[in-house]
Image 1 (spheres, rainbow, N blue to C red):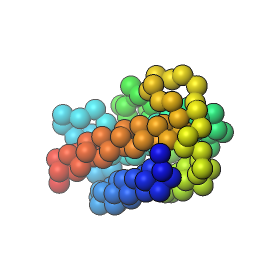
Image 2 (image 1 turned 30 degrees about the vertical axis):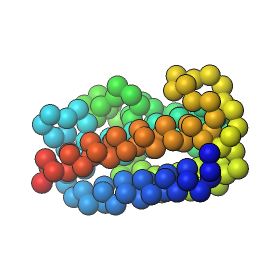
Image 3 (image 1 turned 180 degrees about the horizontal axis):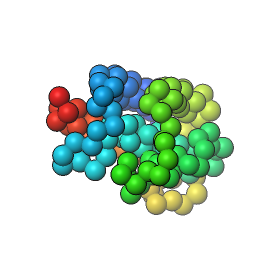
Image 4 (image 1 turned 180 degrees about the vertical axis):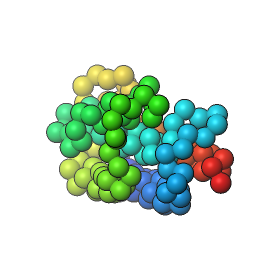
Length: 151
């Protein structure tokens, strides 16, 4: 698996996600549109949190995000269940930008490194990153649909 392909795909899709959500009006960021379970704010926190877990967690790298991100943005969570204020929009946006750079910097030349058996059935660091990008693209599609409903 070529570094330029994997990291290029990651950068391109993360850039598209950031561009998409930058168009979300501030007053719509925490609205849960009819037919959806979560807000755009939750979506970006979820992408950030799951990417951290899939890429760094399964590659046995030190995580940067605090454990409470999982409480707010992990699978099965939703804003209606939040008991306290989640990490803010601006922080999440900055962390999304930083995370893709951190993935590239810390995992370059390691795409073929084997990983422990996992629920994704990924066998290498590169496969973890590709799986994460696929997850992100799925959520970008959901965000796109949400933004159309929120207009």
